[in-house]
Length: 432
Image (cartoon, rainbow, N blue to C red):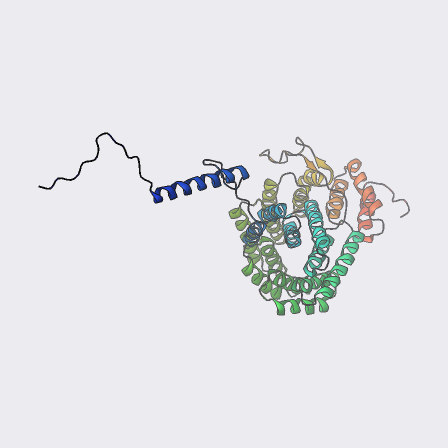
């Protein structure tokens, strides 16, 4: 048997050098140095450090805003664009679209609130134009906002001033880009409000030829047809518009109003009801469909149903004086004069919590601010004054009649109403 040589029992030759082990140690040392350098510079985060919160881009907010607009939720659309502009306040496209949506949202509001929303839209579009003065669509949307502001104006002088400025903006937009679809459409809308119907039709058709799937071009085309008395044609265009943006409830109301003009009340009520149903599904407490339903029933002579729907509008928005005025007119037309007085008083003078318990159920106990006398509220004032005079409450009627006389001294129809009620109250009309 072969025996292997034994090493010395007492001599330790020491470890032998391993080149691979030395290479590994060198790599570990270098990695450690790199890690320490990264930690000190902030390029490398320590273990268990909190994860930074991701910041949404302005583009993602804008996309969300567009989706909300198409869904008919204009309040959320406005908020999304405002969030986008908080991220990038220098985005003229974002300011332009925000102004457009703010203007459209005003269609869901009543007179005073509409004016406030349009003022906000004008501020937004002014920012856009200041950021990009050569952007044609910015000037086009500014024309749109100004034109709708004219529609919400409180008097004729204010109306004319807004229309004149809107026309200048539309012309400037088309000078910057003659093929700007928005500029063509909004110019057509302005022509309608200037009663230049032939030119309006030309511009509306030109806009449609460039973009037949735009909500704005279809809506404006419907408006042009409606203004010229082509109610059936207007309905057709408005229906095409809601195919593009199915939940824009103010367009449903326009369709219903055109059916009402045609005397097709059942179809009108159907579209108003659709608007109310869409609003309910979106969680929007919008009284306007109920007011449209109330006016339709009143035209049909069904005043009880009309009053119920006007009351529903007040249930949804009990501090809005406009709804009280609408209900007062319905009561007046149904010859329920006594009931018309307290609601018209709320519309004209305002009413406190106690005064505003107007029905047996004790609803509507919110304070209401009265509306100032202007072209929009004129009917509430002279109806209220006339009822008071007819019921011989002349001490209350005379201040109303005096205000009408002072503000509308040049209006023969209003002055005729005032003079008649002065006579009822036994008061001479000085200078008459």
